[in-house]
Image 1 (tube, rainbow, N blue to C red):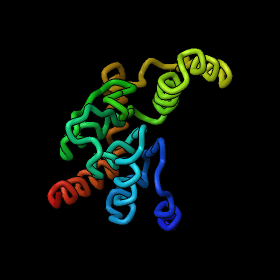
Image 2: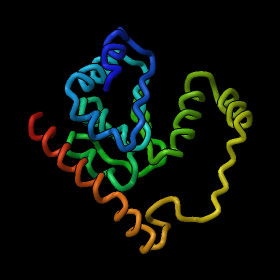
Image 3: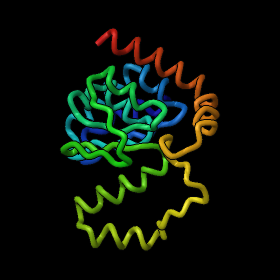
Image 4: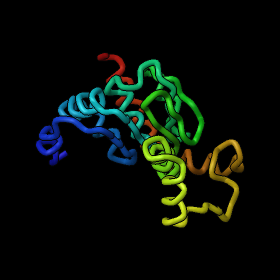
Length: 175
């Protein structure tokens, strides 16, 4: 979190997008970072995240009482901060846009573009980036993947899941 000074230099943002990933837990536990996320998020017209970035928004108090998406393996953790977990790929609740794992980020971005500039603009961007998902396997969500695949991914995520659970228990307990 070496760029906290630069983040603190931002007075306001029309849109804030918080990514998820391995550094998400450490970010949630950095009080100075979280203060800046909360300040920027409260003033932003669009508050967005992808993957586990929604856990940061929730920990900052920006998702209380709101429907929110997250990566499937961590979605239930949103409830600790008063958010309402939603399994949709893109979840919109007012001016808050959240969603599933990494690839949902493109869907979220196109949804926001459609809201800001219209559906035609979003369609042009989709074509320009040749976004036409055609995954080689039908296993991109836990409810359609084989049980052994879901179990293997949960095993890979076990360390992150435990770290996130501990951090959220700590943060939710201090709220």
